[in-house]
Length: 239
Image 1 (spheres, helix red, strand yellow):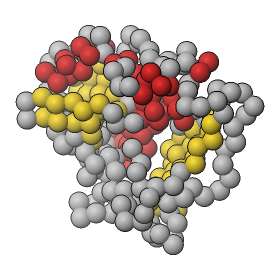
Image 2: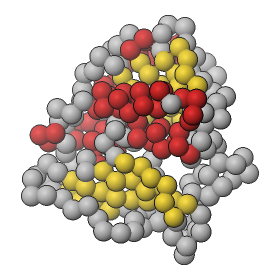
Image 3: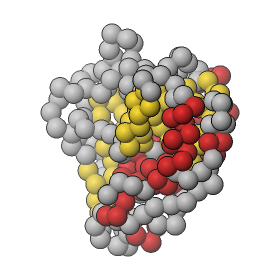
Image 4: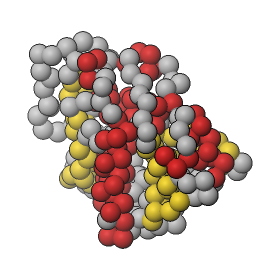
């Protein structure tokens, strides 16, 4: 959920004449912290991204997109390179697949790029680029999507607080579109039903069985149909 950052550099991806298309590009600077991670720079003023929308904040006739299936396809690429990307994959009791991108696993920047693209339902490309030297000489994260409403509002936005016994996480990713309880889904006109569901948890510990079961229940699926990617913001992948 980029709140602060630098203006996007380079040409904007333009919207077409269709009333349901949109494009956006934005970037946010990152700085290395004491933990070795690169948290988002909060000192450079309001985030300024650019979104071009024709026809309002709606997914419109692209509403048949299967966000969770797209996200799971991107997730499989991450899982298939788990060792190289320094992430770990496990099944909790009950069957939920958990991909640790930075809690016990080391993770890294490449894992973070994959994590971000899963969170965006595979509808955006995420890159690490040179930062704006006037703001910060280090790297920045650049995101480009031709479907910003679906990628960001219906998926990436961290709009689901998830709690359990000594556990709290902010939930994001396309699992939110299956749950569909946030008011913004009425505004964008999109919810979905999916046989497999993918989500991202921003938290400092792996989700226990009861939390996984709770998430699955709210998505009206079985726990074994759920994949959760997990990383704290203090990790390389979670910055």
